[in-house]
Each structure stands twice: as structure tokens, then as C-alpha cells.
Image 1 (cartoon, rainbow, N blue to C red):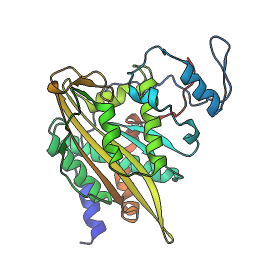
Image 2: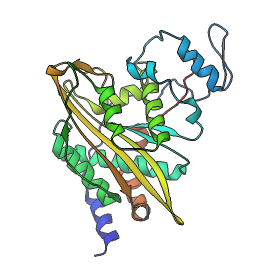
Image 3: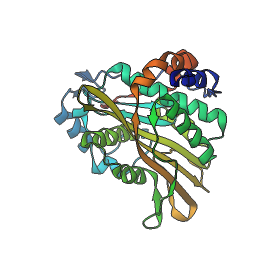
Length: 305
């Protein structure tokens, strides 16, 4: 049995658990941020200057999902909107830096979603090692070269643990391309400004937390060129935290460090697209059309309410 046959058999026989969250598909949101009328007759222009001026001026926006330091420190990078994209992919926040083909993006989102479904069938989300070991195992079979499966315990600086700050800090250790870092920050900012009942917030929070455990992944996918070949690399951060407090918003969670513990794994994955290209249809068959229920695009510019 050759390598492709082994992978095809693995994908075909792998148990997957497709969760049912009961989250409505309707988002009540529009990506159209060209000239648009709003309640008080101001106009939202398709302009980086106008958009950034608005966010600097606006102090309060109703129904924030959460508020945090990143919003004040780094306004969303709207100029990246045309070239880059971000998605909620079940319990993952997946971003793309650079000019990547739409089919490639679909393949990356589907492969990471499939790995999550398989990990869910193998263990509970609060079983840190078992869940992630299965997650990485599936990604390896789909074409990823996984470097390590070790988690580090985050040592809090001071008396407060803030998940968002930890995420930005550990992503910094991956030495991602500068535009990759910017697009992640932009996506985090938009997530922060979406209403609490926006489908993206509901989907991500439902998929990535229980009452006292938060577990999620943040990935950035980008292409690198080697001669005539285009290679795909994934900067991946897996975050898992437990707390004695009730978790409302995963990314906005803040607690006294004595009441919470956080572990993380960061690594760069090389993706063998030639292998996945031969097994893509099998992955699509396993998750079928249901994938649309668990993947939702994050617009990197928000219309005014």
C-alpha cells in the first residue's frame, strides 16, 4: 500500500464528531463597506483614513463582544482587507496573509475543520493532550509536518492573566511575516467589536469553551516560493486555559492569575499541498456541505450601526 492509499484509508475510516450548536446561519451583517448611509446621515467611506478616524473618535459602541488593550494600542489594519482574509473556523481563528488562491484557502479551512471534528470524536475538549494529539495526528495525515506536541505553561507577569495579551505575546515567538502579524491583530480587533450575538462570536465562543475551560487555535497561513514551487506554511498557536471563574468570552477572558492556568503550544507547520491535493475530495466528502455551518468570514472593516 503506497502513501496515498494509506492516507485515503485513514481519512475514510476516521471517526468524526460534528457538533450541533444550534447557532443561526443568518449573521445580519454586510461586507459591503462602500459608501453607506447610517442612522445619523453620516457616510462611511471606503477609505483607510476615514475608517481609522472613526475608530479613534468613537469611544463607545453598543454591544461590544469585549474590550481590551489591543483596540486602543493598534487600530485595525483596514488597508489589508483587499489582500487578506480571516475566518472563524469552529474553535480556530484562521487568517491568510498575502495573495493566496481561494481554492487553497478553502482547502486549509476544511483540513483544519476536519482535524477538529476528528479530535472531538477522540476526546473531550478539556482533555488537553488527547484532543490536541489527535488534532495534530490528522493534520499530519493530511500533509502537515508537525514539529512538536509539547505544551508550555505560561508564567503570568504580574497578578492578572489576560488571554488576549498572552495570544499576542506567544504569536510573537513564531517570527511570522510582518503582514501576517498585522492581519491577526486586525482580526482580533474586529472580533472584539462585533456584537455579542453576532454569529462569529457565538460560533467561536460555543466551540472553544466550557464553563471553566477555554481551548482554541489561532493560525496564519501564507505561501513561500522556492523556485517554481509554491509552499504553504502555517503559523499555529494552540491555547488552553482553565479557571475557577465562569468564562463568557474566550479571547476577552481576564482573571487574577491565582484563579487561572494557561498552557500553549506554538509551531510552524509546513504543508505538503501535493499530498492534500490528491485526498481533497475525500475530506470534502466527509464534512460535506455542513462545513458552511462552522466556517464564517470575518470582515476586516465594520459598517457603522
